[in-house]
Length: 432
Ligand code: FSO
Ligand code: SF4
Image (cartoon, rainbow, N blue to C red; front, side, top):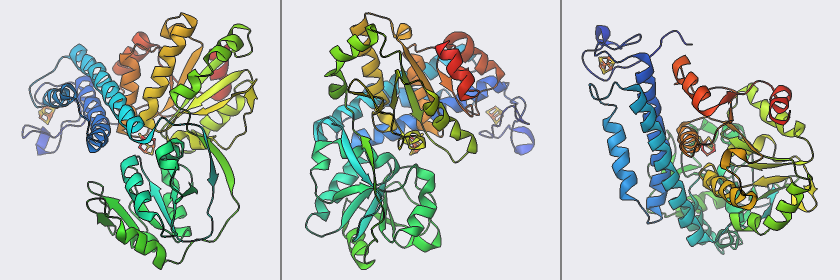
């Protein structure tokens, strides 16, 4: 537990005019304060996905209504009821489910369903733009405008899965991927003389070395960077040309782009392999990465997963281990990259399909979810999984800070959520 149980300074009654840190002057206790904070965080995550869905022309009035209602519930003197605040968390999970589904459908409609793609990792010779973030529409518009310019476009972090979408991969300008999860960008961008486009959250305040070649999109604004309006990427392309270009470095390969259809086309084979004991278990290992040294858990965990298990992954947490060659089980790849964090919806749809395939309930499937969280999108995804009734998940290595003992007790008793310990012990717990 932290030094203070809660912090709220949203009304003028607050203690000494500074903040309520033990209990609210209004009577709000620490657990309801933390649940309200959690709700606000989940709303932020949902809003990011909702924003991108709206950019693609789709929206859901029920989601918009929920966002308003949930925010209202966090106002002063409205809701002091812990069970209802937990229920609102689960409702947020439902709203996020709807938004992720809507966004995925829009992505598929516009760019086709992803197919596995082998991506060159590392710089190639020539003028370059590095695109980071999650916004596929921004990438598409940029790729269109780069046609015929000789400028190469590289994905970074959560943009990697873009290579799997046929209607994005068709652009010659889409050259490869550079770097790993979002937090390597200060060094990576300083070291590569490319123009950089930050399309969503997870863009860092730039170092002076590259601030003048960093561009962002509408709501994304960081000191020193130029904001692109109306998808006109002319200044980014001009900057890339002016910089002269990257020097080729040794490239490796990464595989991404496993859409639901690709995996389901393997369903009969997967069923046979599971029934014959050749596939023992599926692990969904992913979420959002942070520079915290404890995050090395994820690489160690994947390295120690036995060879008769399949690893599904998504979000930027995959960069902890997606360079590993895990091979295959009779043609079924052992490492399957489902995409961005919002593609958690694909993992959910896949789990539902596996339930049908094996005529089992969700929690009886041989599937373990091990998730890391960094920011508010991950909070929304966690609540989506809880809303769907998924139990027995592992979460770590750092628990969400809004969890106090009361909340953790609920997560453990109702959902059997387990904080991660170390890979060896956790695998033993899971596999027996
Ligand atoms: Fe990661 Fe950032 Fe996408 Fe997050 S790049 S950290 S919570 O946005 O969701 O996977
Ligand atoms: Fe304190 Fe309650 Fe006001 Fe928050 S809403 S500042 S807890 S009195």
